[in-house]
Amino acid sequence: MVPVSRSNRERRAAKRRRSAQRNRSSRQEPPDADLFTEVRSALADPDPLHLLTYVSALLSAIDPRNSHPLVPREADTPTREQLAATFCDVAIPETTALLAVIAELAGDDELLRTRIRRELSERPSVDPKWLARLAETTAHRAVRMGHALNDGDNVFLGVRLAGTYEITVLVYIDHNLGTLVKDAFVVGEPIEVMLAEYRRHTVDEPGMIWEELDLADARAWLEEAIELGAITFPPQETESWPECRPLIEWIARGLPSGGTGRQRQQWQPADLNRIADRFFASSWGRSLDDPDHRSLLESLLWYGTDYGPGDPLRWSTVRVEILFGNWLPRKVIAPADYLAKAPKLLRAFVAFAHDEVGLPTALTGETLAAIDACETNYLELIDSPRSQGPAALLAALGLDEGDLAGLGEPPSYEEYMLDDLAAAVGGRDQLDQLDDTPLPDEPFDWTDIADDISERVAEVLALTDRCCTELLDGEYRTASRRLLARVASGDPAQFRRKARTETAAAAVVWIVGKANGLFETRTGGSHIRVNDLTQHFGVKGVSQRAGTMLRGGGFRDDTYRVQLGAPDFLTADRKQRIVRQRDRYRRLLEQQN
Image (cartoon, rainbow, N blue to C red; front, side, top):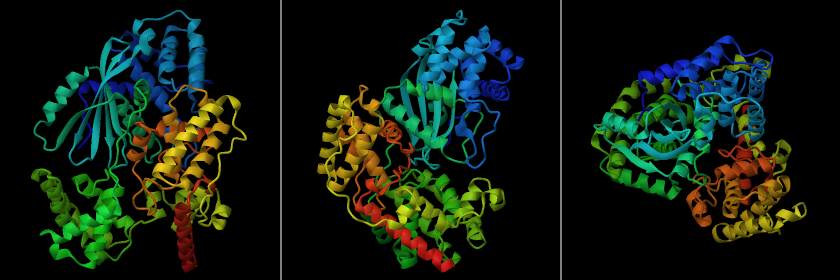
């Protein structure tokens, strides 16, 4: 499945957005004449998207999330605050219009929004009238256009802009790249028109799925996919993405909260063993039942569950291309004659797996044809020198070792992994001293908890204790108590706001669970599904609240990969896995030396 395509109208809009990037301003340089000309043209256009997409492109052009992770941000690139200040210094209708839009699109920054509104209150209003009604914008319908092979989903949002204009937001979320936004754009048409058009274009395509999305769930889908895309390098860039990201984020913030994002199925080791046994007992796999093919199938199932859409029984042409063109040659270190058995094995397994889930034969035929098309290049690749480990990572970043000459000698793969383990426990010294002693059963520490939030904290504590007692164990109870105390003392304002205690409690346990690999089926030890946790608390989603709590506790607010930086929050199982990995990578380093 590919992203929905654009009409000529959207392409012209994309051209206008690109011109906005060339007109970036800083506080030291006043806005130029080209910018004023473009804004006047946008204000004269009866389509509000002209101005909105223009401002979105301006904000995207200075968004620090677009920076290369290893290249310093350009010194003359202004911040949002500096850009707004530039427009505040020039009181004319064009800058008033720009500020009115920025106040909405930058609505996640309440301080900036307040400053802009104070400035606007001292200026005369400008036409068009819809500028004053932007806060009335609401989304009223969400639809998912998916596919049986789960490569990705197109999410359609029907939006009433300024309470009047009908527009549609289209976002393509790619699961093969990690469930992130690969492309998106906004169209000045009602959602019913857009849905009818795309249904007509896909009526003959097998495996299409259309379903209504709850608006809160749509928000969770979009925000999680945007967040992951923003921390992924190289970034996904199209004619309109990420230029329309500020505009779509603004619309998403207006949707109800508390939704559930895309849920990956959790595969237990026993589930995968049963799949392998059924395959090798079937007519497709019986002749391949030997140690090499069983070992190779473990790798294919690993790829199928832990990468991409996360379903080992649904294989698309894209998944095959990624497997043979990148993942298998880079990830599995083995002799070429062993790896060469993979195409034949995958042909048999795809036929078996697609038959098990009842996929259309046309889709199976496309996937088998993709294996045939990839085989020759794959065999050449595994029989020639290729990047693996850190070298492959540098190549993915568009770099080589020469690019890092000023940064010193690049670490070996083993050093890189040891650094990653050290980050989970707070540093190399802590990693050296780490053992697998279980966390003690200890009471909650009320020492630094403000009196005015103690009742609210006690409610959250009771809920987390109950969850850990019923679903987990005493170690998780202690870790959750420590985390709750850290957050409540570090950011008591979180507990003064009106919010569901169930969501706060679920977020606490979810953070501790993520840090300990609770939701990962391949780690061994205790694990449950995220759904089990959210259903226990009666909530739909927790990642947003978890991000707020992580910031309040002084942690990195990365909800995709939670690292709390101290063994105080880690269970014996998790510490045991870290110690085992630590010792393994150290042995490998010693062997190299």
